[in-house]
Image (cartoon, rainbow over all chains, first blue to last red; front, side, top):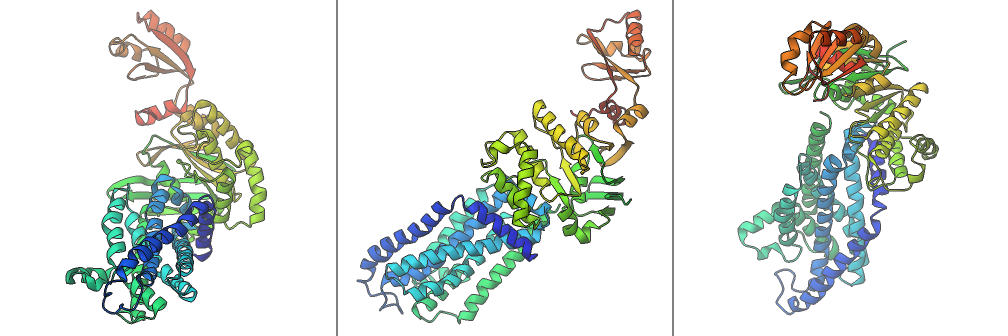
Length: 259
Length: 307
C-alpha cells in the first residue's frame, strides 16, 4: 500500500461525502434511537418480565441489546461501503479507473477505500454509542470503548464484501448477499438474543460469522461479561477476516483495473 | 533528444487474443502523435500500456526513459490522461472534480486553486464551475476531462478517442482547445477512428489494424505515398454499380467498389469523369474530392475505418 496515495483517496471520499453528510449523519442517529427505544425499551419491558437467558438474568434487555446492536450497525455500514460504493467506482462512474491512471494507483485506491470505511464506521459507532448512553442503556465510558470494536467489525465486513463486489457486473448478486447474508447475520449473530437460544447446528454457523465475534467482544467491553473465547481470539478472528479480504480485494482490483 | 515514448516489439495479449502485435514507434517531445484505426485495432490497449496502467506482455516500452513495469508511479505522475469515458464524479462540481484530481497528483492545495482558475478558463466552463457535472453537455464534460488531465502540467497528454460521441460543433470546439495545447508545446498522443480528426490534429501518426502498424508518416505524407491526388466518387442507381465495375476499372489508376458507390483514384478526376461518360456509363452523381486518410486506410487494409 502506498500511504500518501491512500490518504488522497480518503480526502476525495470526504469531499464527496460533504454532499450527503446531513442525511447520512441523521440516519446514523435516528436508526439506533428507533431500535433502542422500540426493541430495547418497548419490547424489553416484556422481555425483562421473563426469566432472562442463562447468564444474563440480572441484565435489562436494553443494556443487553445496545452493545451488540452497535456492532451490527457497524457491520451494516461496512457492507454498504463494500458493495454499492464499489460497483459505482468500477462501473457506474468508473471513478476507480481514473484513480488507477493517476499516481495513486491500485494500492492507494484499495488502502484509501479501507481507511475511509474505517472512518465511516467510527462515526456510526460514536453516534450510536452517544444515543445508547443518552438513553441510559450503557455508560458513556462503555460507549467510547465500543468504538474500536465498531471499526473492527466494519473492516471485517467491508473487506470480504469489497472482494466479492470487485468482479460484479450488476447489483443482483449484491442484493442476494444482503438478503441471505447480511440480514440473517444481523438477526442471528447474538445481537438480539444469545446464540445459545438457537438450535445446535445454527449455533455453529453463528460462531463463524464475524458479527458474533464482535458482539461477544462488545458485551465484554461494555458490560464486563466474560466472552465465549478470550478477547484476543475474537480480535484475532476479525483481524484475520479483514486481512484476507483486503489481500483478495487488492488482487481482484488489480486483475480488473490493470488489464 | 531522447524520445518521450519508445516502443519496440510491443505486444499485449489477453489469453489467446493478441490485441497489440509487436509494434514499434517513438514519440518526440512537442509533437502530436496519433494512432488511427478502427475499433478493436489495439489503439486503446497501447495507450493503457503507455499510461502504466496495463502491464506489457512482451517487447520493450519506455516512457520518459522509464520502464512502466518498475516505475509506473513515476510515469503516471508526469502523464495527463483523458479516458474515452470521462469517468468524472457526476455528483461533484466542476471545481471539485479538478481539485480531487489535483490531490491525486500530490499537488499543494494553493497550487491546485490557482491551476483550477486557468483550467476552467481553458475549458470554457466559467459559468458552470460550481455546478454538478451530471447535467453538463457531452462536450462540456469532455472539456472538463481534458482540463482534469492537465491539472499536473503533464509532460505528455494521452487522449483516447477524444471526440467520440460528440456532435460536430462540440468536436470543433474541442479540436480548437487541443490545437492551443499543441501551440503551447504540450506533447499529445491521440487515438482516433476519425480520419478527419487525425488529419486535423496529428503531426505524425501510425495506422493500426488488427494489432499491427500498417503505415507511418505525416497525414500529408501518408496520403501522397499511398493514394492519388484526387478521388472521384460516383454513385449509380441500385443494381447498376456492379455491372459498371469492369468498365470503371479502365478509367482510373485504381478503383474501389463500395456498397453504395465507387471510388476512382486518379491524378485527374475531371478527365476520368469524361472518360466514364464516353464509355457510355451514366452515374447518378459524381463528386471530385482530394484524398484523405480514409483512402489510405482502405488501400492498406481493404476496409473502411468506420463500419
